[in-house]
Image (cartoon, rainbow, N blue to C red; front, side):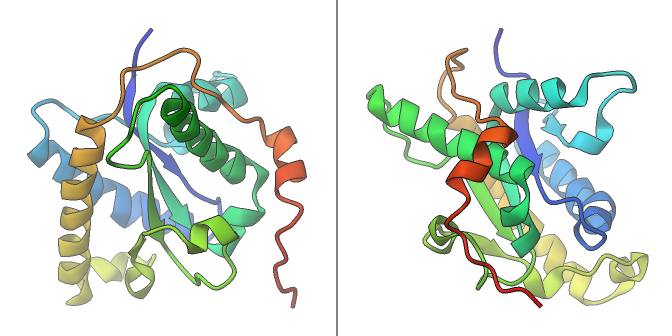
Length: 196
């Protein structure tokens, strides 16, 4: 086995985030990466899974076989056991590589802030990220607004950085750790988020 995906897209399934990813973020990112890589980039996103696959196993396998992760951060991201398991899996992979003597110049998680930032996991607050919270419009008319040019420029810059992360990905190893969502609750209990 080897890598199957260049990018694993990790995001919370919310009515705000999903349309933004489907209509705006993913198509532009795919196009920009196509302009940078010498092969067709493969981005795993869970809504594109084939009918009939066992989705929990398929997501775990895709995560294991992805070079890097783009994480779309919002407060719901850090309340989702699935999102946290995906993020923790990549952080554990970074630790596994470090413990094996492989020093990563570039991280395996590329965080994009969709909204907020104050109510994130403490480790997320200490992590460099791209903030697109001022460009998180989910409606179709966003494409016709002047802000879409700024969004396009931001995605181009993200793709250029991601290309470096993808190129620097370590050799694939079947021993890369995968965290199960059922185990996240234990790790995630210290997060205190305000309630309305």
